[in-house]
Amino acid sequence: MQGFSAQAQRGGDVKPLVLQVVQEAELATKLDPKFDYAGPHRLLGTIFARAPAPPVAVGDPEKAVQHLQNAVGIAADFPPNQVCLAEAQIADERYQDAEATLQTAQKLLANPKWEKKRDVWKESFSKVQRKLRAKQN
Image 1: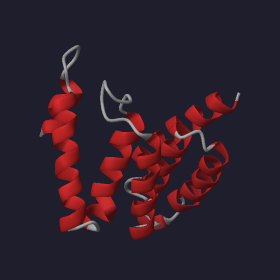
Image 2: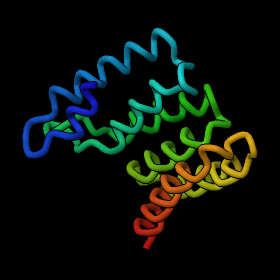
Image 3: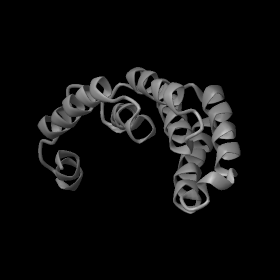
């Protein structure tokens, strides 16, 4: 719930809300790191990759990569883990790593197992791919 509040709030200080989400996600990594295909690590990695750096917020691309590598270690065949890892690698200026991770994600997206979610995930994949291309140019 706090994450939605932080996302919806515009112009105000959202750092306390983000810190609360981070704290709860860190607790979730201890309670059940495998929940939702490593969802707690995926959430933390995404927050650290997208948030502005301190003192404004909690952004930390290196932490993002660490959490998302944990997510991939837990559920390597789950495409969003790979896509989010690539996004974190871009934030950490690891462009070659991001390229390789996106190639893995693309192969995973082709698996019939993920047919029902594929269209939604392809949109995220495309956004991260465009972000990588922009950084490489």
